[in-house]
Image (cartoon, rainbow, N blue to C red; front, side):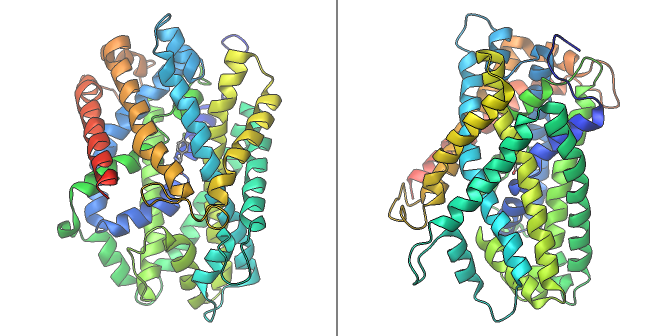
Length: 454
Ligand code: PFF
């Protein structure tokens, strides 16, 4: 024990918690549709390169900052650079966690609702677009449905608060040890079901043979943005989880496990989705609706489809929950460390505020349906600020801080101590000082140009 800060009781606990943070809606909902819209396998190749050049070094960097300082993001920057404005990078992280969780919980709430939709049964004669619209609250003739999206958003936030209020070991570690294996098993069952469907081959073909004609500059932007979001980087979630690590754990190896698990699960999720989508003649590039409209229609056509649909939305909800707790933990850790709040108070008060901040995106399809920011609805606007601005800016400043203020060489030595299976070489300095910042700057600029040019 270092002071009275709680610590993961073993290495597996930490790896599962960090992988639980990383694996979420980003892997199962976002990755397949982004890959589908960017040409399948071609996207995956580019994505794997960004994970190696940007994702892994950033993962190591954030874990090292947390383990070194044993503090929340604000406290970590204060400890490393006292009397300087660097703590603002930590503050931006806490704020970003707050914003992401507010809308993440809305989408996770739809997933919870779909668990019950599946229990009610998915049948081929159903209109799945209408089913989705009623779930998110669109008025499809019987008035705007305000209650459903708000109710599930509330249920999801309550689950998240419950786990965080129970603590790092009794809450987070205990639950990820149950939920992560459940997630893997559910996913494998779905993959076996999907790849054994007649006609699954066309989906495998799409997913595995790269078509570079679909690759544009946009593909690279999408790959980098996706790697930050999916690995929970750029806002201090991994830093915060790293702060509960004790001295005897090796960051280079732990980081490798987390990145490997997250990437592996995203790719496996594609194996559950594309064969099924192709086998039944649906569109792989269906966009965000792939999960909530296309997939239920796919399940409806399968033998025991409602059961597999139930498993799928349970999987999605579990994955979202283990990510949401890491988002709330960032905010809670800041209040606990810096403001001396009791853990349960931090979890409950912040949970309520985040629920309230999530009301606008939750009602963005009925009462606030008229809202538009550059053509985006409320939820997409929140998501745009978080993904196109806050995460890249947070990641950029963190990389610069560690590369030039802490010094890449020192972070490298720290991440290799005690020595593990992976030895981080001098390439780390090259990546964190030059490649990562440059790549993020390009993403920021072109992302902004892209958005504002319509
Ligand atoms: N990594 C999560 C996902 O892929 O769904 C999302 C996320 C969680 C982003 C935690 C950021 C974070 F701090």
